[in-house]
Length: 110
View: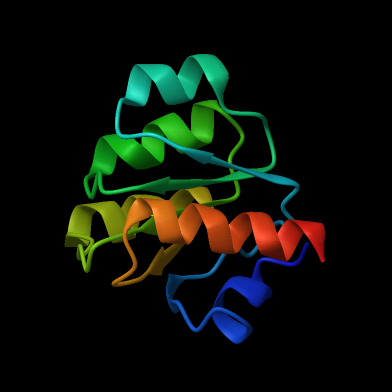
């Protein structure tokens, strides 16, 4: 599935673009970053409310393509800068994590 679908189909705000990879193959929902490191599959998008620079570090270590920040969370400047440096996309939504996870699953199934 193309990352651009997150913005184009779901209407999530694309804050940072992933300039290296345009596709993702799975999603993972968690707010516990050690859980993400141990269980998220590479090429996934992370659905979370963890809006800080450490989330980018975990995404990089786990070979994730994007982070979807839920519940209207905003990314601080240091997170945005780290995401740009590591080419990790960031999307923003007012959806809660359950709804965002369901929508990502629907994208992947269609």
